[in-house]
Length: 322
Length: 290
Image (cartoon, rainbow over all chains, first blue to last red; front, side, top):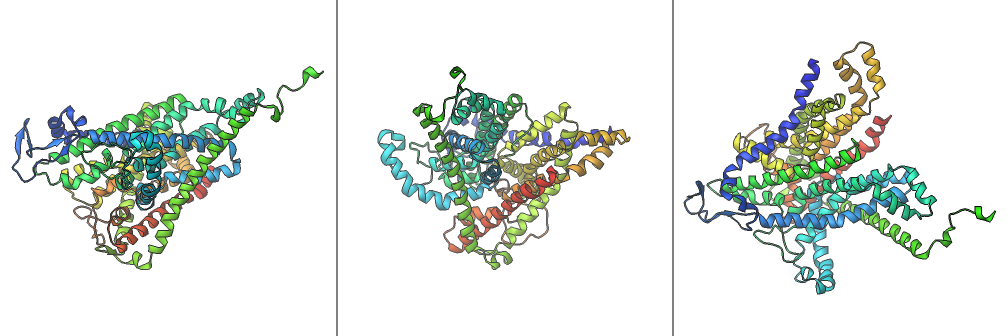
């Protein structure tokens, strides 16, 4: 019994760590939250103010004159890049899972799945390197002009100028590749573990193999797919290095076209800490902590939702580690 | 008798439109898989081809100087930071994993499992910034091995917990029953019987956590800092280099020598991560299943 109590105590490090992260970020950013108020999420200006002037008192907080902190452009950038990533990754992941589970012979399936799922293991900074070195020139010179000339004629959001290749769409494309394997792996597992009798019944009624899959097997995995999508969403929202290297790191700018530079909450924390440290009142560093706090809360909610969906609906304990 | 003919019509009698739709479906899904594999090959090709040309012996044996030199300091730093992270995360992670597997029906175990999954999803930059304001600033450690290792340990802790738990779940209950019937207590059963049986699986999990640590950047940027020199052995108040930082920084510099270092670092990191994953999948995992 003593052994068990001891284990339970040590296991408590996990909840303690999570609580410590959330509480500490909240406490540290408290002065910033007090100063920024709720307008933090609807203003689209991040301005440290005049760093050469003497700090003044505003709302009981010491700030540099002219300082305003708002992250609307970051929220828009984060949501837009994540949505683009999901829009690409969802059909691609579903397609790959279908083909892996149904068309590839079982012996070969393990190998190909392993190869494709290795994408999950590649570090995000390597995705960033690849994006920076080869994808940006390719998209900027070839794909984007093509898009602008075709789609751009009808939809202004796709029209010229296409920019240099850094931007929202590039970030979305690179992100999508990082989350596709989450969707593909989870869905493939779910498809393979569907009862064989379902397919046999569908085939027996005269369905083609694809109809059996599309109309009978796939609907059965709908809940798993939703859970996996939330997992992927959580990953895309918090992805840092790859986005940092390909998004163009826009400041105080809302994208007007899909090629425009953006920044996300996660990438902004990295790109702005150095300049935030120039603020003698420390409010800029605390406002960055507020971004980290908001990001932590969002990702905890999204992930908790994903796990609840996968656990409750699926009643399975298997978890894909992402 | 003809009324008893099979209900299923032969393939050529299925409506053309249905056959066409099926064919389109298979083609599209096949194209998705092909595209995904092709992209994976593309990434690997870029990393390996550029990395191979950049990787010279001097890169492995000298330290960074300005925008050139080698990566010895970064290689050492990555090893030190990852080893530190494992040292911290393994005891806690394995203990938490044991608890959530062996007492899996308790409410505390369910909570631990759930929160481990949630902690996996917390963005690494959030952990990094927590490390910065908590350890670098508040505790006053400045950029240091201690801060970097603890940040990495937070990232790997939930992985180790979950993989340990999954490995212990694979252990047959017959083993536990046999041990209990011989009069062993919880401690003897878990440490003497279950843990050895689950060891390959647990080791796989630890190796995969190591791969994650080696590939992480965001948690280290503002906890470990960067240094052009070898580690001086101090746990606090001395920054340390690591490979992923080299990838991120040196690729942005206008010098070919710096870019070459970035490619070499990318090759080292990717190669290491891939080898661990392949090892975990084809050697340890197979042994664990036996």
